[in-house]
Image 1 (cartoon, rainbow, N blue to C red):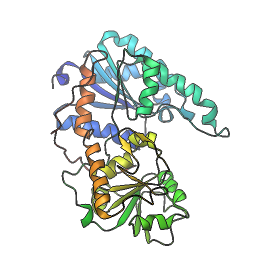
Image 2: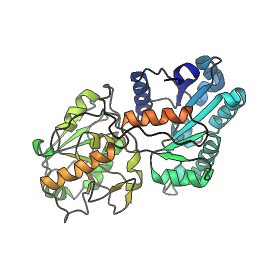
Image 3: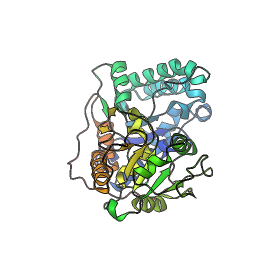
Image 4: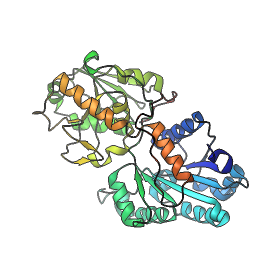
Length: 372
């Protein structure tokens, strides 16, 4: 890895835990496994008042040229998604480092959309979009996780700067071998943050028979914050609490179904979906949709609980969907994404990452807390 001796590699991320933090840790761990050292800086408005981003980059990079991978989620950096201070810090960093800086921006989010008028995001989404647009135009390379995000970014920056799109990788590991669906009990796992899990059970209310129709006979809920409200009464349910990755992975491998509630245009950024896909689960989505996006289609790659009553639902059909979903995931696992992002940090402006061979093996990622 020539970058290790010629350029400093630094990830910049908002403070806290969650999907973005897991993504950052996954990249850092994979680069380290490849013999490439990198550093992570968590930045906030409060932290840059004490020591600027440019000064902290200097501490890490010294006199070396610097590649910065900035992970962007507006709400992580600012109250109500407003973080104009971040643009100021990046402008100052660019001024100080000039041609010695290469900035790769990973857009985990863009801005709020579809919010009702009684929520602040409805009124602030325009300002959030301004921030996202300015940030995109400051970058040397752009990366995001859904085609919907990519379309907006392409319209914002124009054709000169390509936008690279990869759905997120699993933050709970990638087993090299998975148990056949027919050898698993007909149970479903629901995991993630409390709000993520609650959306599933809110949608299931009154549709418990649909779950049974699809072949599910029990539910296991995983995550902190206590069990969700409104659990189905006709199906045995249990709450396992928060599990570490080395506990959650075997549970997923021992479950036939994975339940989630996600609009199709955002499935690419769902770490819950990626975990189900990498562990060979058949996915049941409680969000009604007929839309195909990011290479995924309801009925073909996963089932929608409320609308797929006429779909093929035997074990062979479930196994076929799980296999298709696993193949979809194999196009963007952690190893591949780490290599592609690394290529962007070293390439010239506008260059596309060179994709590794399709036979790139998966490697199980180290255990760490799962925070879907």
